[in-house]
Amino acid sequence: MRVVFLCLLLVLIWGCQSTNGQVAQEKIAVGELSSAELLSAYPAFEAEYRAYQPTAAELSAAAKLNGLKVVVLFGTWCHDSEREVPRLLKLFDLVGLSQDNLQLISVNQNKQEPSGLYRRLDLRFTPTIILFDGDKELGRIIEKPDNNIAQDLAAILAK
Image (cartoon, rainbow, N blue to C red):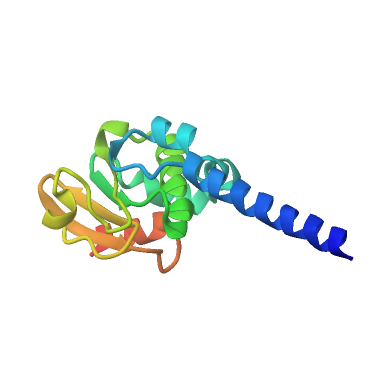
């Protein structure tokens, strides 16, 4: 009985160490990232990017973003960011929107980053996706869209 207990205890301890090791390997990114850097360094983001299959309506809605700037404040540690940011990236890629019009800013768990953009844009929740026409903010999607990311961004444009 003691041998079984000791074996179970060792398995439990080993399992906890393995989990801690995995968390340590996926470092929290802070600052500006390219979409390629994000997808290559964070498997959860890359998996969602691959899995997401936008509808024709979503692609049509996303095409309306042509020429507008999108700023994304997100966390590599945030489950909402893991879902929404890859979807936005895929829409940009499939529609052929310029990556020059997309700024990805990763924040730490305190929702801060070195440039202070989080403060200037009044970041409260992640992800926050902000649509700009030049320097004018048109609107935001905070945490998760009401419908889907493409339709919500198109709705901001329709206002």
